[in-house]
Image (cartoon, rainbow, N blue to C red):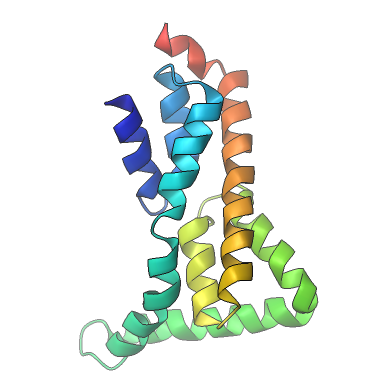
Length: 156
């Protein structure tokens, strides 16, 4: 059950692998297994987010209740991404996305990074690779912090 919960937690937006890895370690799952399960669970929804999020936001932009929020999301993504592209350059976008996903701070992560990449029409393969490497980086950071904080002792 703890393996299934780890997998499911890693799929939840905002929590993602950043919550799944400490959960797994606190339940006695070894770091390498926690990372493997967390990365797979966190990456599973990424293609759907990449290919459908922008279309859903565009579809909802003219709807009465959700329209203004969806339009705001689209505009914010375009403006922020254009600034990032201008500052980072073409090669820098990959590293910027990897670090955005990989540094475990509130509001960052695979879901948010993939949404930005989708809105800005970034290359799918490069975006997914940057997101996946960022997820692995975040998992390593969270796993090491979890071990340093002694979360593995809760399992015994």
